Length: 168
Image 1: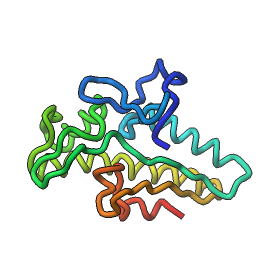
Image 2 (image 1 turned 90 degrees about the vertical axis):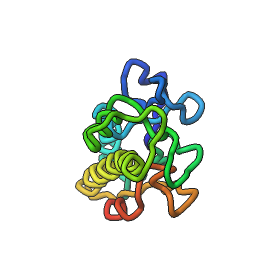
Image 3 (image 1 turned 30 degrees about the horizontal axis):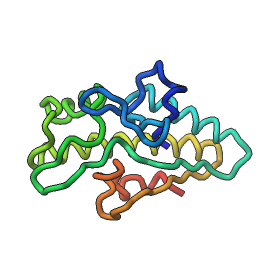
Image 4 (image 1 turned 30 degrees about the vertical axis):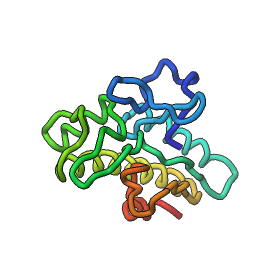
């Protein structure tokens, strides 16, 4: 999934960061990976390649969680959520032409861009992972951790309709 044991990758810049630049914890000793970070993506894709080389029928990617979910949701404002690392800030700026808002996302344009930055990264990572597994003759699946089936883009970082084609 999109998390690693932090001490094993302490000298790398692959983790999701909060607005203060601190890695986002996932569970004891683990932190969340940033799907916009090329080094993090390379680690995940290499693990999919390695799993695809094994004598198994498929590859399963667990815990598709990209950054922190929002603490609360309003239709006109979301507090900072997801990941605020340099890769995500750059992706947000590329999408909007504006800097990443440090005080949260206001209005449809900012909220939509923040969601898109996350979902596009996860969708492309899962598509690449699926292509590797399927190219090796394996099925590909993920754990759809989805506490609210209508809002996985807010809580997990993907849209079900966008990743469906990558799943077996």
